Image (tube, rainbow, N blue to C red):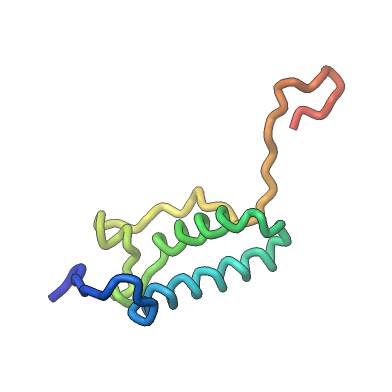
Amino acid sequence: MLGTQCELTVHDSPPQNGVSRRGMRTCAEQAQAMFISSGLPHYLWEEAMKHLSGLQNRLGTCALAGKTPYEARHGKKPNLAGVQEFGTAAYVKDLSAGKLDSRA
């Protein structure tokens, strides 16, 4: 049987959350590695986790025989042209800057 399988568990029972806890620990370790390589402050933790989940949705998995979740759903490979490296410098335009001030 392929697809999502419903597995009932007892509520408020952490021992039955093994797969979920392992997945979150793996994500946290990968986000930690991204912080170390980028040198960004730790208050950007949420942004790192969002970036990581976006990358994981575009990478192949064993459960899908090497296909990406996007590819399994839509039948074509995802376009990765717009994916930025985590920690890339970004500039914001300052509309209130004076004539001789920096505008970014």
